[in-house]
Length: 369
Image (cartoon, rainbow, N blue to C red; front, side, top):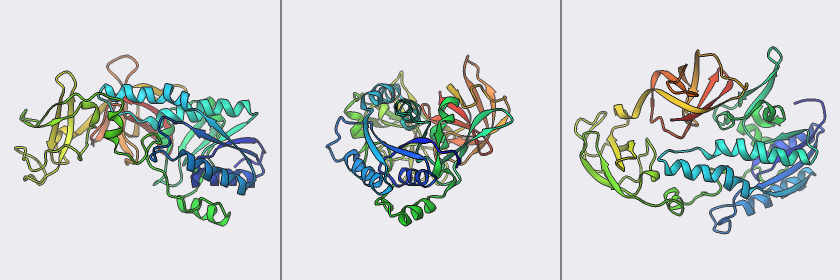
């Protein structure tokens, strides 16, 4: 961490990662201010969204560390910039990743702007990622976190040079076990707090139930790859490619189903025909319809500010996936790119992000079409 002392505004979420982030910065001699971001309020009292308890945890951490904390409401910005796009994508039959958009539009835009108004020189978050200035190019680079099991560079791939230049990721060089240990040794009250999963506005509730409050159901047939109708879906927006649970078609056998076959081989969502309102399901994890040798993505965002050369790299088509060797090529349509993989990729899903890497360096990416 830099020996130069800065005024740093830390996004305190109530979790252990951001708590240790603030503690490390304070120990390094920086002037630290905590900000708790409230991004959702429609049903915050329902028990599904834990922002009230999270703020209490963040305030307790700030008290122990000895820093001020401010509660800032970004719910309006979140609804306009993130949630509206989230619903549009689902309505179109795609599967968006709101965490990617939240980082670009809220944590590193609305939050960054607010921090600058407070006189901050830097902002810091508890993301497991790293950044460095490349002296050869003069550009800031985003790197994977040191803990491969926790690396979150995938969610940060839309950051710009301006955003990255002001960002600090103090836990990016640590493993999760080290973060827990530091929190315990520092006496932070949330040292053993369970990691949050998913998005606040969904929380622990059934995802389909949540979407049903905002999107209309439009039932239609579920068909096999041979065109045989085997069930009914409740609306294409409520399913994602590769989905195995909640299809209601167990015990039916698809002719020629690979890998195991039999009446009990699992079914997976494989395709959506929006025009015909038809969902296609296939039997067997390795069915050809679930495997893709290439993909096209658009709405590209490159951390360097310009595309990398059309060359060999690696990519992730979903979070927690192993890097897959690929070649970056120009897409057939303007402003699109194509990835061709050395090995077929499973359940490549429109709406998700394809993120490109050059070794540990995250180059950016775009939305799978």
